[in-house]
Image (cartoon, rainbow, N blue to C red; front, side, top):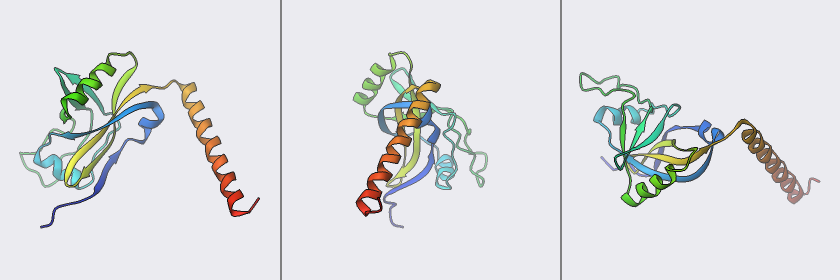
Length: 158
């Protein structure tokens, strides 16, 4: 059987980019059991309540829901168990320095397979207030409008 290549998206946390301002993004591997991998390959996962914590120099992914594998037996996994994240020690040290600041948290952005290996994209993020969210929406809308206007101008419609 040929090896998998490329990137296959399993789950995405779209609300994280709205609720938080993203400062840094890291790609991490995960320590998973067999039934978790099979459930992910079936495209079943939810990052909505997920977050990462730093415990004793190790990063742990918590609150991520990977449902039990339907054909699994007594070997099935716990759906919301803590999963260890695999990063280089230098990256963990940089994340630990940033987590000391107040208002900083680690949120998962996406869960995917990269060349057959399960990866999670985690972000060092700062929570946004409601007025910050409105300002971000206004900036995005104005940028979209200017892009439309320049597109119409280059096509000669204006």
